[in-house]
Length: 176
Image (tube, rainbow, N blue to C red):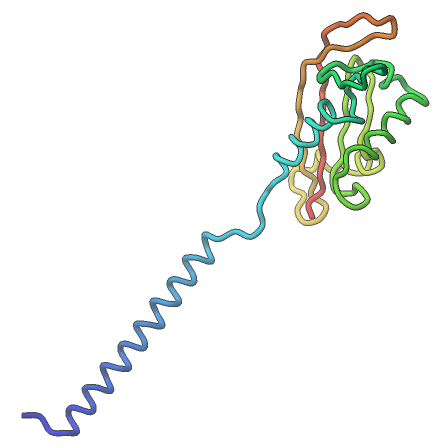
């Protein structure tokens, strides 16, 4: 039979060991969940795909709109919208006003090229970010993500004829 002092000291040791093991288990659980839980998701691929689809499928985008029925013809683009000068500037303003991508449209930019003519979405930022895409070791806020798309389209010429062309779209986004 054990004395009362021996029973108390054994119980104390058992409580201390169980508290230490509980702390070790909780800290291990926290470290494992913190390691595999990411708060910062990379959604640039999804954002850029949505933006490109908005160019060719949304009202106010680049697709041909029948003036009589107001019907949009997806993947049919009027080449006149891409001609340099007032038409291209008007198209760029129309894209910015019809495709909303956040306050001030500052976080994403694009360049659409068809038949050697280009139109920009958020041209000032595209011009500023495009040189940064060649820097492969850029980190931090100066890092710019780039994604290229190609899309087969029908281009409506000024005489009304349709011909098949390939559009090249480059989407840029600065790391936030």
